[in-house]
Image (cartoon, rainbow, N blue to C red; front, side):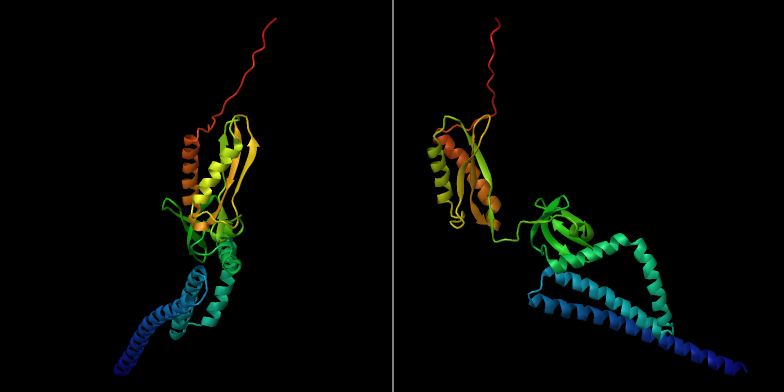
Length: 270
């Protein structure tokens, strides 16, 4: 009797041990297969015209879905009823969904961003009080790198529901500048000086043509509007250079740039 019991026990131990070994082998193979599958997907998507943000999003989704399938398969191997587990998971997901409304909103926002494409990875955007270059569009958030090399993470839900300014969407961009000159200035001469600076700048586009015009008769001087068109990537370089050149050239020509001033007339007492 004892020998039979020991044989049965030993058989069960061997079966459990083999089952555990096969489970570990399947787990190892599954993890490796998921890694290979993700590499194949990323490689295929990167060779196509699909945006980097879409590639990142699909890679994250595939990773989560693949590990979920692997866990369910391993549970089935141990004899756990996955059907009831899936039903339980479905019921739990409703409760979890109610408690994670913010996260689900971020997930939906990520889908909207990838489908509607208000911006893509590499664009310089202004949104939610932040601005910077888009580096990563993930399942729940978008990461920006600011001009001073800080990393800003914005939830996709808030981002999808906010006003987004994409400075990189168009090939050309207009530079809006203005300069004030004194009221005794020869406006034709001042305009000629500014136009000569724009004509000499190789990065100022001829089409669309720039605009140099009187914009306002202010309290302290006359405001001249300066609006050249440039390639989007040249925006800041041209703006800083042209403003400096305008200041230096006006000084050389003896054209005054006025500071705020006020004229007071005192009435004599009788």
